[in-house]
Image (tube, rainbow, N blue to C red; front, side, top):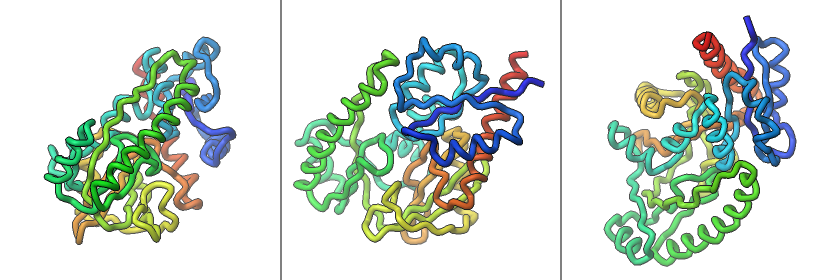
Length: 307
């Protein structure tokens, strides 16, 4: 039986620990890997043959601009774990909030902010949640997440975000210009109630909970890179039910779900594709292997269906 070939999408100047682990695992695995570093200038015309050769792709990076590459290879008829549609429908924090509300999954109180500053003032006056969290609907590593105590601080935060977006758009245009795709610059802002709580990460691969991590920090921001201290925690029956609901709603194969605790109640904050596997170094290999096995299984299924 032919070994499935997996296209491995990653970013960075050099191979990270995840890619190094993946290469080591290949010695005892019944699949092959072809690496695609989307941080570098990739001309589709030059790598077309490599793309066609792959049975399925695995997107291991959380960088937003990598999705442009994912959309291109999907347009060439290739399946990606997880898909660009899955990314946009779930990583978008407003869309995730709406999905949760529709399925009776508890989430922080959230509103979608208007474009006009005057309208935002009215919205926040009616929302009446102070302090309030202002964040972009899409973003990674807590870069566009700030806390405001009053409307003046909200205005400052919005100005700060706009300046940062201008720099980011210039950088991302350079990264994706070879793909002949215009970046989607229209990203909405949301306002969310502030819940004082550590962030509780649950990592799921192939419908199984494989890791938990409490992300703690001395400041208020404990998500993403701001969590400096990590501890494991037990998944109770209530949380397991919520996780199963979210997986059923999002249809994600590999993800990390962040929860907060409001009193004794679990509150779903967001879901992340391409989750970090390095909270606990002694479990990183296990998670990388589980992710690759999940992708390889689907790659083999695709190959059998084509036959």
